Image (tube, rainbow, N blue to C red):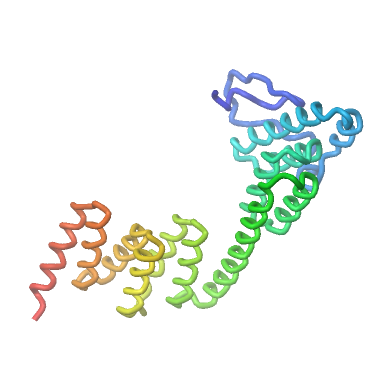
Length: 262
């Protein structure tokens, strides 16, 4: 179903045949950024003894949040997720979505507190324990990433700090940022053969990410195009991932370089 056909209209949706890329804001943008929506008090006081009604209203609010998520409106998405949980604290989909949203914004403490509250409201739900473990791990990663970025701002040409940050990005699964960091690190001039061999071994044998190793070697090859051992390693890696044309190109280049050596 085409999500762009729908727009919020109170607690329901209306069909929008013009596929407008915009959504109306929630009732109060100030409320959306400051905490629990005031409408929950009225709804919960009226329907608090009707569990089916509370669940239905909670799901409606969650679907509103998902529409705003699809349109990339994080503040509005958060407003409706908090509305959903205010109406139905046991709604796991809303807990999960809000945890991801807060984590993406690096609001780890808020995310942990919110899931802890959800676990208190629904102690039989076994999903919240692993979710808390994941958030605490992400918080630890986030803190370490901020520390390394601060160190890097002071010493941008330090190979070891660049490598430490690259390995952290690998552990976090941030592969585009990882490859960007490797390309930046590869452009540094103070590399030793042992350091280069170590990073290749790490990404191939431990991280099982040969693409990251290839991205690094390609950047080094542009800087040191006459380094036959480096070019040969690049050919071997390309061959291992099935890039036959690139492997042959770099192998031919390595042989030609070696032939010119005294």
